[in-house]
Amino acid sequence: MKKLIAIDLDGTLLSSNIEISNENVEAIQKAQQAGHVVMICSGRAPEDIKQLIDQTPLDCPVAGSNGTKVLADGKLLSQISIDKEHVKKVAAILNEKKYPFKLYTSHGILVASTWTERMLAFLEQNQEFSKGLTPKEYKFLTEQPKETDTIKVFDEIEEVLKIEEIAIQKFFIPTISGKDELIATLKAIEGISITTSGPFNIEIMDTNGHKGNGIKVMAEYFNIPIENTVAIGDNFNDVPMLEAAGLSIAMGNADPTVKDIADVVTLTNNEHGVAHAIETYVLEK
Image (cartoon, rainbow, N blue to C red; front, top):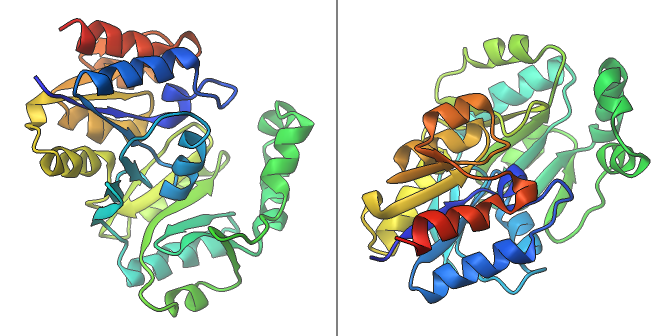
């Protein structure tokens, strides 16, 4: 029976060193050779996902930016964007509170020109977090991103919204102190959903933009009944995907709440938990 396997990246397919192990690669290839479809369903932008997957021999369809942008066979299958009025309201709150943020868009990742200044202030306010960073991580987090084909820097949100045919799928906001207060303020805006892919961030999409949508769109495209889908994840932004799938698998390192929601629990991301899940619950069936 042909299955669709949706796999998260950070904390799931990727180890703590941000690497995809040979064991995971081989298990995915075995699943593909057995006729199953394996997709990557991540909070990362599609361009970012492609960069990581291109370092391996894998070729997988993708649902990026938390399932708001779904791509397969070189085609855009679905794109769910935040209403521009809602974008303005969210940006106004973040600017008032001086939070650093990035936008995941149809024109790549857009980074506010205040990123470095705000990230330095953020790390200053959260000493416990910043003390745990290596010099390389600290530099990566605070460095103003360089403009590339996929990364652009902007000054004001108005100039972003004037870009022709731009669609904004996601806000990414690093946050620790004041996180609950920020979420409470943002919840007053109708039409958006708020999630997190880790303890130190908030992610904002349209209400219909989530990983559950990503797996449903892909299942429909490949003509696979939703009950024949498998989802593997570790964090809160994976919950809609885990709830939508026929079989939900939480990583051994997953948040306890995510483990409670899932049907089964596999090994951790540093123990090739994805490979273990595929071999145990897909290939042996």
